[in-house]
Image (cartoon, rainbow, N blue to C red; front, side):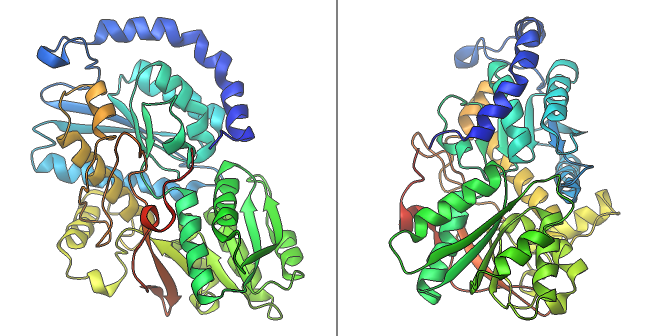
Length: 425
């Protein structure tokens, strides 16, 4: 799959800034690296010793996507919990969090700070497609691992020019395929209206959905986009309501997801099946709208919902809740973004454990050589798998429907690799 226009624009906008420091910072970085022997000789050991490992994360702690900022608390709680247990292979984790406000230029600034000043081993988790697109050229030039970015853009798994960057969550094309399969099975003649964020995130999921329903009776009859700088999506929702569609595919980030759900609830003359994408499905997004107003909304997930009673006795969920209360007492364990942070940090732990060399190169290779790895916070049937021809760690999701005050899983997990084949490069 080709990089989209927005990805190219993000790269162009930051190219001069990145090139200016690339050579000098690389020389300084090489001077900092200590020697390792054997097959690992000559590889980078910046940010890792026998006793410590330093990781950096870039999140929108402020700005229009600040709801995602709490993911960093779930990550930090996991590492604090592990540190108290002795660390990862005896190494205590230091997790340095920086705020980019969901602004790509700021993400570049923070990436450089983490690499050149903080001397991190890896930039674990850069959140958002625009921010990740802005920094991946720099991190790949510097040969700094950028594992498990917090964005489902398919380009992280299809682009061969950035081997140091890889996603984690199901890519947006795979997620779109799950919704497409559901509609083809349950509503084979559905007329779909789409609200989407006008960037690579929104276009990726919409494009994947269009491909997945091609040749079926499911038709996209209306589309409306919005910008992250827009104050609201009320006008777009009014326009979509006039389409007569019986399904609304809602491809939004949390702030706009809440607005779209509220606008749908207010318009009693239009009652489509409302499908909200995973990244805006947290109860924290739905609650301001009023749970009574979001009954029957459909989404998909891949990790355990800590608010779901079926996981009350689950050992990993219990450990997560206890750890969050201890290490992040101001955070809500029921918030799915916190659980996401715990799950992705646990996944990185698994990858670090499989490194053949305790080096940046070792982590780069480890995240691309995962074979059916089980992570306890993921749903049963969902594992991490990557290989030479597959850079998508998770491609299995399960549908869920909102009833009462929480999500309820339904159907069986859908392995999109098996149903649709690999995501096209």
